[in-house]
Image (cartoon, rainbow, N blue to C red):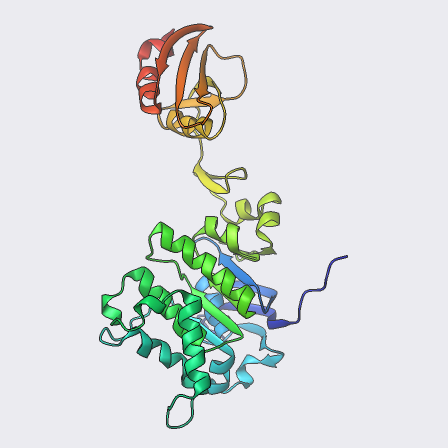
Length: 348
């Protein structure tokens, strides 16, 4: 029996987002949308450039007025909150913060306690405990005393995340938190956010272009295509029922369900049968496609490449057959491609 979803901390009904509300220049980007976000889940908002992702995020934050519809946080209309009340329940991390470089990481994170501090700005034991927990949970305690200007992009993003956590929100919005980071840091940030959402029971909504990490770590995907069409599903369902492909529809790219990534649309090339085990077959096929071949599992071609791997799968060799006659052998994909570039193979 399926357990009911928890009560949403964020909900919107009939929401239309865009620019210039109630003016002659009003421009709708998406809607009407009915959506909800519950505590303890990480939701990734994805879509092509210009679809309205950042506009939707800013509207849900309360930074932009909706064209139509209502937004509620904890069953209360967002426009009924004072700024201080709103800061106590929701936190926002923009795509790139620019704190004063001379400020230390600890000073920056301490700012997250401002909505909870007294009129004098003094910190209580509870405030100090929240700051300590924020550094720990964000993995940034090691550079707590360092000036912000000395931090790498990845370290600075972790400190910014600590500031957000020090605020102790029930709801958090992040705009491209993995932008400007290297690949390992992008993976770590999404993994860390998923853990924080589940362990702290915070509802987290973020925009991202990192589809692979979103598919791996998000509880749900919100997909917004270039025409404002909205899709909401767990990552696995979004892939299998074609939601991801439809959202990023392109004549130049295909979404590969098997790998969970986009690949260039293949042009018709010289047909060649390719036989072998993964992952060697996958990477061999990519190299062959780049050189104008169309590898296939099917028989019926004059040319065939067979891959044989060692028992530990660390080494492999490739054999080229032309009408069942061995014509070349290789011990790397580069050597194979050089053999296949022989014009006599294409003409034979």
